[in-house]
Amino acid sequence: MENMRMISLCVFLLLVAKGTYALTITVKYEDIGGAIPPMHKLHQLVEAKVDASGGAIPPLNNLTSSCSCDKLLLSSLGPAAIFQPKVMGIYTRSYTSYNQHHSYRQNYGADYRLYQLSSGWLVGDKRGANSGYVHNPDTSQTCPYLIQSGWLYYNSVYGVWYPDTTLVLRCIQ
Image (cartoon, rainbow, N blue to C red; front, side, top):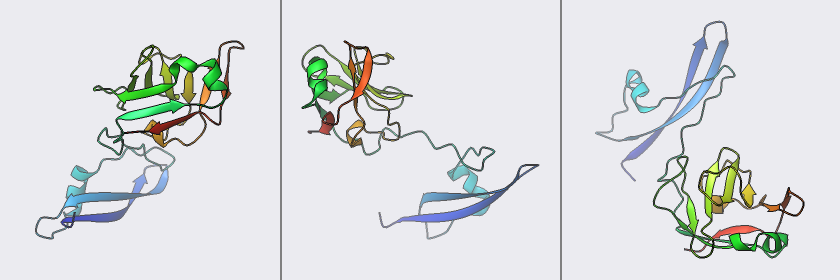
C-alpha cells in the first residue's frame, strides 16, 4: 500500500546488572498526514519480550499469514507409500485451527488429520494426538506445504521413524 511506511528503529535497553543489549524493531503504521509517531507512543505499536541473552521471543504466528492453500496432496514413491498407504491422499483445510495454526483433514479414507504440535507437523488419527504416521520436525514453517524435505514415516514393523526423500506434501488448490 502506498500509504504505509516502515520505520526501523534500534533501541538500546539497559538491563540492570545484565549489560546493554540492542534490539531492532520494524514497525508498520498507517501514514496519517505523514507524521511519524512520537517515540513515547511506540510501545503501543510494538511489544517484544526480551530475554537475558538479548534476543526476543517471536510473536505468535498469525492465521491470516501466507497459508492460502485449501487442499494438500500427501504422496510418496518410496517406503512411506508401502508402510503408510492409508495416510496418502488429499487433505482439506479445516474450518478450525489447532495450536494457532491451520489444520487439515483427509477427504477420503480413514479420516486422518494433519496438524502442528510443538515437535513439528504430524499426520495422525485425531487432531492433537501425540502419535501418528507421518511427521516433519520442522517447526519454522507455519504452512506445512512449504516444507521441502525432512518428512518421516512410521514403520510399524520395526517401531521406528524413517526418512523418505520421496515423501512430499504439496499444495494442489
